[in-house]
Length: 379
Ligand SMILES: *Cc1c(COP(=O)(O)O)cnc(C)c1O
Picture: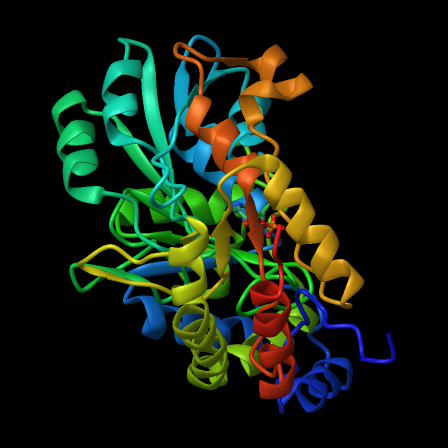
């Protein structure tokens, strides 16, 4: 096969990145919370409408910060979907609390709200809603449930920057939203993240925790004349080098999203007849959602057919991986978690999906090769 290999994901390069980094390196401010952090934060707030946003070193750290803010501790339980990345679960386990795993909805890969309702106990402190692929969780019943039981809602919005539900922007609907700027995400700075907040009090405390437990943020604004240790904390702020790259990327957010939606729309249109004939489920967006084209997945009729398609595409130079070994089945999940009801749909989803290459500059001819490769799969 002489054809060029088609990468699953390729980090976007923004026009101003290098120049921005050069500005930082030529300045006296390379550590965190400088001008590029200010600018990137303003852009993030403009995209999300979040009243408060703080850049962090990763989404994992934003989730750790969220657990600290909600005072999750020993004896508490936090409900997390079984089909998810590890970060939300490990943030809970780090606080000495119990992760309670619940099943997902096969139609979206998102947390099943009925399963959440069944898993709530007197110890439940929070629920983590991961908007899988940037498609909103079924938020109406979930918001009702969390309000009724007085529990917090954390949105793990690593996939969902700019996504919407009933016109509201993901990451700002629950109590706390977390973003990832890892280089596999739509917008990136290598490694990075953010915390989105609406509540002013939470924001004040988040500033302390993020800056080693000090009120350095108030000091920088001239509100106190020296800064000192105020609270528990860690170091969750990125350097200006990361912020400089992030600022350049956020400036091109619309371009990035248009490029990704172009590819997503081609897959959806070109594969739908084939999928219907083969009993394959293509990623589908339920009503009232605006998705982010973070990923495009196929759900095959069986694990064998899925593994076969991955191998078939690999032979044609197309990288199409699957992901998320169900957390409840993992070694640490069994040690730090509790699974009240077996997560059978999570196991099925994990063993039958694969994701197609998707990045903003993926050339049309490569998209066509992916489509042809899938359609030629005839097992
Ligand atoms: C990537 C990802 C994370 C972790 O993000 P980092 O910025 O790499 O820490 C968390 N949750 C989900 C759903 C992710 O996809």
